[in-house]
Image (tube, rainbow, N blue to C red; front, top):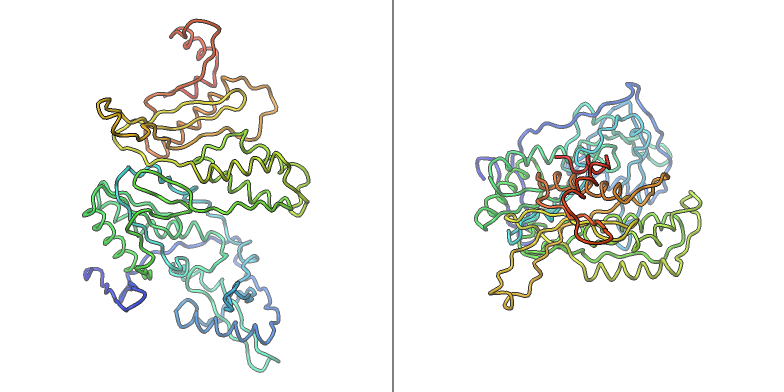
Length: 452
């Protein structure tokens, strides 16, 4: 690690990695809609809150997160007490500043899929403490994020400070975080061959086929992060299964949800939206069908005010119980790198859905010795909950599922399915190649979905 100018300190608790000399790293520059400074006056604070604010600002100054400034920009700050801790938290109201920042969009539109981690490869996960506060603002942008600390009775000129690192609540914060961490990890990815490195926000996951390579990848990753100024704690590095990351618990072969609290005290539309957001997140792992969640999604209908009243119907309560049961009993699987991916469409019209899966080869001579299910469910695929207003034929729904599944597997694994199983109902006999060709020839949506 000496080549990076890095030392590792080993106090009793906690074990912290830090950099003595950090590398200069490029920072992402924001684009602005105006050159005119934005000034939002600081509102008065009580004596108690003013004292807490000054202590928090002194703390940030000591850490090097802020610096005194004479910037022409300003926006208000306030403090709130943390729940059950008696400590204060500093919040910067950046709404007016965010309005004049051009949107970067999402560089990483979704979290990586842990199902693509090969079975029985070991993992290591780093949770970066205070990730945003360790990513520098571009020097040209930093003065835009200025705030003032008033004094009682205007007894002295108020002092003004601006952030040197990404402030919480800033527009484009996730995008800059993704870009910055990617710039640090890209050289490591290039150096470690078949090992896998995933990162999403402040979590970095490493996966390798053997422990020696995993240790090498972990060392390189720690070196790179520490050299860039990130503070890492040993207690935030997971080396043994089950590995917990992004709300999931990842085992050697399977993936289950961590304990997710499902709110069943529904009173407003806002409560329903929060519940349905959680359901949409877990559906690909749990296989919750349209019939399973329809009673809950139907609660979204009605008044558009977030405060409009809602309550669980009897059907919705039954649906919620099934969801909770699925969360406790169902799981997804990590893939096997030597097996092809397949896709099958299930259900009855109009409630069709599909699953991406692999199937292990079963040695019949060992069948009685190994009771593992050879079916590896990787991910479930669903149609949109919003129905088209025009008449939709079964072939078109099948085509939409195939299109979504093929798009998904190419994004996740960079390949196509070895086989696609589609449901076809015939009155008698067996389906022939000619019948299938006629079905495809007569439906343009299927032609596009199956086109290579």
